[in-house]
Length: 247
Image 1 (cartoon, rainbow, N blue to C red):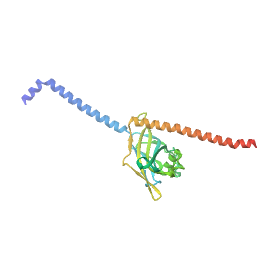
Image 2: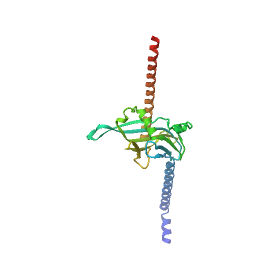
Image 3: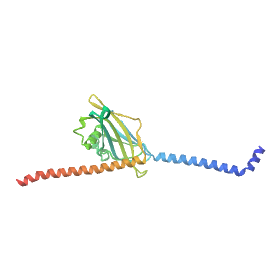
Image 4: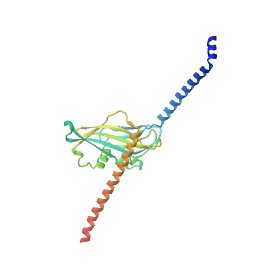
């Protein structure tokens, strides 16, 4: 014991340095744990799930499992169709089309409620969920946006990738979650089967910027479609008025 005390007294400077290093290491670990917990608290977490069955009448729900409120701004549908004929390597011919589902939920039971109940957009506090409508309603909206009403029957929908985008106060970028559903055709009905048990979270800054660019492009496309419809309506009205003047 005396020898140990003598050694410590002879190497007091070295002992002090070692104690300071250990103390600094403990504080670094402690601060790292605090920072990790803070980041985990602020991290977005969207849950996209199917409810009330598995056919076209089933509903798509989005839940906010993050600690901070979000505001749902859009639902993007990437649809994969199997078309008649053969593709590369004599396999099925696939076609992927993308659309943004309309803001309004046309489900008549919800449309009688207030404005927030009749739209897919809106705020979600932590722990809240929103009914985005039935799969039939979502697909009808996407197919109408793509102008596929006449040709949808020429091929079968096989897979749908649904992405829910939302604004968050965490930073200036969107947050989003993605779920993929296989579409199985059974005796005249469609079954929607999730490919994963968990929702894929889109957290990378590059992916979130790309998502924002995609939504901006969709807004421009929507403006062009409205302009074309307005022009076509004006031309149709002019065609009705001119013959009357001639008469």
